[in-house]
Length: 207
Length: 207
Image 1 (cartoon, chains in turn orange, cyan):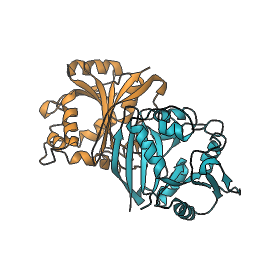
Image 2 (cartoon, rainbow over the protein chains, first blue to last red):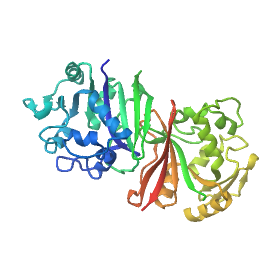
Image 3 (spheres, rainbow over the protein chains, first blue to last red):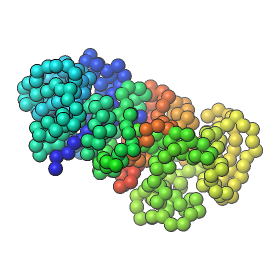
Image 4 (cartoon, rainbow over the protein chains, first blue to last red):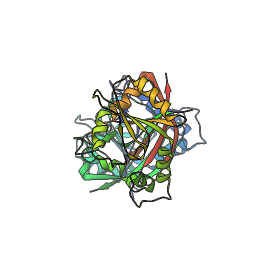
């Protein structure tokens, strides 16, 4: 059955981005280091239409598996603003992306199958649309932290993956804040380790 | 060569204890859940002179390995205050424990080889004494968070282990705060996963 999940790189101190993020500073100060492991993998570079990268390792396999499972994305306004000016013309989604924003805007169609839909409907309504688009594939709540928190608190997340980078960020955007922990518990599904990063797969159990 | 390390249970949001901790509420509200995996293991129960527990699993092996490597401990005043009234008469250290405190107090000898030494000397001086006591074994900076942070910032930690519990705490005592991240980087040494917890072993690289 189709799942709703999020999948984020995170530091030992729980940050998914550095401070001062924005269109001119995507991922915030120092935030790009969280994803060092990813920039070396062919599956990631290929998705951005770039050459090179490593293939024969677990990190690359995991990126491929994640891209393959996504049938639709949901993201927050700030994540879109950061990405809009930085993604290539062939945006790296290749499926529908719902952007949660109060801004009225026509759907924005990009090369390669990505269409951004701008909506201020409820979390549930947007998710229903994304699920319909995704069919048998999964829906990814792409971020940022606030959108993930809202979907977690609404009991709408089935699974999540953290790519735990061996680094301390100190300040920036924390993932697990404002969570109503009485509503959910977490179970370990799988752990895959590599020299650069630890991939942690969890299931969310709704209470 | 003898190493200086810390070894702590931690939640997905980076807490090593719940809020409102103290002598009457060790580990704070909800903090004991961080260690659920540990209370099931024979190596841990045995250390507290309790019966039962599981033996044939990686979690138990890891507890044994950690206890076996410790030749001396260093801990903060608050951790001692929490433990003093709760540890059994045969305190679960079986080696010297240096307590960082301004309080003047004679060494406190317990059954089974634990002696608590109370000191307000510098981090470096205390560590030198602990190293001498430990001989070929390792020195554990036991906690709490503030003492670990001070030793990390002083460049005196060689390695650390995090036992990552699949839970969100929400509030309490955070481990990685006030770290001068310019002074150190972290490398993955080993990851051991089990159904209840993920054991993350890291090396500290001093810059």
